[in-house]
Amino acid sequence: MSFSKDSKQRLTAIGAVAIVALLGICAFLMFQNVNNNQTIAQQEVKIDEAEKLKLELEKQYYASLSELEEMRGSNEELNALIDQQKVELKEQKDKIARYIRQGKSTKNDLAKAREEMSNLRIQMDGYMSENNKLKADNEILVQQNGELNAVKVTLEGEVASARVMNEELVTAKAALVSQKESLESENASLSDKVNIASVVKVMSVKGEGFKIRKSGKVKGKNRASAVDRIRVCFDATDNAVVEGGLEKFYVRIINPTGETLAVEDLGSGILTSNLTNEEIRYTKVKEIDYTNEATEACMLWEPNTEFQQGEYRVEVYNKGFLAGKGSFELK
Image (cartoon, rainbow, N blue to C red):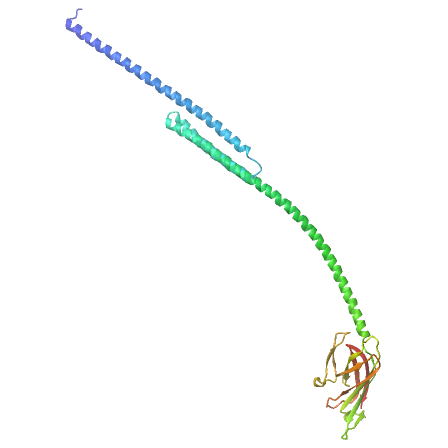
């Protein structure tokens, strides 16, 4: 088969175009291959860097855990703080790990991962500083507690000694109180004896009724209706124990019905018995200048009232003790 000149020219043109097209395709494929190789290389670099960051993260994380565990001890507050810090470290590690995984395809994520790795170290340094401060504070507290316990032991010893001393003082005080009471009792007894010994006894206690006549003469009477006054006389005996001087004798006249003759305006009053502490009404006081010798004394009672018939009793007191007594009768 024969081709014309024009046909040959067209075939030649088509072949040239095909060759140029093939050359273009080859050139594009070659360029695409170079780009792919560069992309793969860059991707491999990213993967290598991500793996390095991952290994570095694991190393730093477990090293931090080890540092925290080394600080653990018997302090419950510090141990609780370490547990909380470990939880926060784990959260930070997981956050960085996510950036690393994403960083295999994105440079920004790798940069973020590196930044967070630095923050992790700063965070750990903060933990260590906080823990060291708490540990130091705890050691100070332990030392202070030790000192306080030592002071407490000393104080407890002093309190125990003071308690023993106090018990001894209480016992001694009780003994002294007992001795004092005994001495007071003895003194009271001796005082009573001295008082009794110093009483001036009286004898010959007599009573007699009298009446003053119109003429002014005084005559003894024994009829109650004819009597307007009573005279009581007694003999004060000698007593060498008593110092000389004024002595008071309290005369008590008791009528037949048992009543004490007494008028306050005429010198009557009340004395207290040194034996019974009983209050005793008396009729009148007779004072004498006592010279430690037997002395007669008389007292006149003029109540300006009628006297009853019957037996009258007379009691004479000195220094709160009954010194003597007697009786008389008015008919």
